[in-house]
Length: 380
Image (cartoon, rainbow, N blue to C red):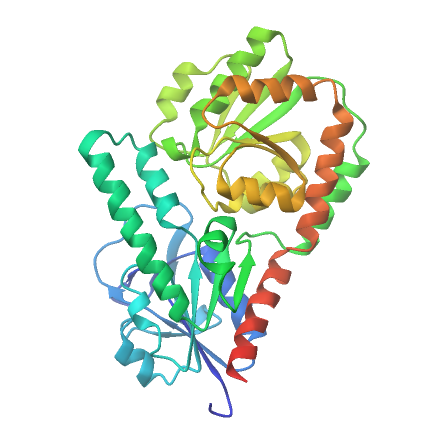
């Protein structure tokens, strides 16, 4: 190792590069780059595959001048040869097809995992696969999962975003680390907890929220159907949906008077503020094991979660105690829980406090502290 250690961050996919050198990067990634640069005691480089094609229209992504980033940018391509040329002491590699071939090119290799073969298959099923396509998907994702497990075993460490990857790869690795990828600093978590603690006790209609892309795997239709079922039972509750996607028109047609489609809002200036002040329970009926940051971000603003029984939420719920697990793919089961909670407001308050307490220990700063500490230990 050189006197100044070198950390190389490998971009998961190709990065669109404009003629003037600007990169098409999302704000969440730039936050992460800054966090690594602030904590790692040496040089930090972002290694990307440059794509000159025009980028797609995508909310939350913009052109960024590389000079404004906290890390150096290398457009040499994510290849084993380039990683060796950079003399990386430790490389942080996404555990995806086409990136696991980089394991071993740096002095130390750490893979970041999110999905298993099973969770990928669940995502495919949510898209409506049937017959032979379903069988092919099951076999193909099982094979992919085995390949990723082999890759994880070769790496010096595995950092797992949530419980899906942890159960598949991290729990049995000699250097497995579980973290939660989200955008909430500790100061914001504390502010949200204080706001909820200072609010007077409520006895009116329960305020429910949903957040996620309006696509099948996120289960937004179950949130709308929940509101309909609660109204049928005479349970007073409102439902606000945050997000945008191809199911929006279908959801708008199905929504009753207690449902509001809020659309896509700015996370920092609007989502955090509204969910903190106006949501009692976040309903996240994701139909597959999605390691979504929305789980952690909802808990971080003190909103306990009612979610379907999947690996991601089941593990996080067991660790945090901040919500309720419901049988998957049934709005009636969700309604059973909400109907009971309508008369047990103290249980909601207790779950909210548990959410805040858990996330204080898993703030953005705390998670990057743990992740970078592992990287530093590996290069010593």
